[in-house]
Amino acid sequence: MAVVAGFIGTELILGGARSGKSNLAETLAIESGMDVVYVATATAGDAEMAARIARHKMQRPQHWQLVEEPLELAAVIRSHNEPNHCLLIDCLTLWLTNCLFGPSATSQSWLEQKQDLLQALSEAKGRIILVSNEVGQGVVPMGEITRQFVDESGWLHQAIAKQAERVVFVTAGIPQVLKGPAL
Image (cartoon, rainbow, N blue to C red; front, side, top):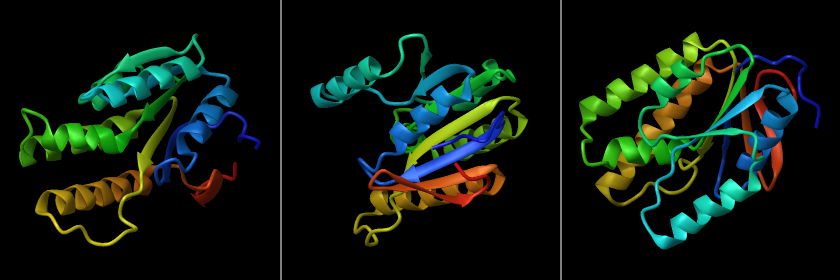
């Protein structure tokens, strides 16, 4: 897979669980030739998640800078807003969960976080690769909280896709470019 030489901009990579989206994002980051800042949004709420986080850390190149930030994505983007930086943010749906259901979550705080993220993305000077789970292709969830999550996830993806230069959907490890330059 070849990368568009000198690609600068925002990319949204969507896919289901174990679709290969993170692998694609890491490959694009490596091939960018830029200084990579890996932004992890996961928090270890249990032993299984802690093991996942540890496994992911071991798989990534050691020279990548790691920023673990479950909530303040806009601030991280702004603090690493350099033309020679590639920010790989994995994953938006975990960030959304943290924003919607964390201890200080309110619908107003979520809307402010979302707007701040979209503004930070529009100001970015380098390359930003956002990884997220596509959760809206299944049945409509029965519970109110799950429906809220699916709705907010879909609206977030739409807003980011609208301003992104490239949007890719990954299924079974096969990337499909929905918008922007070919891979």
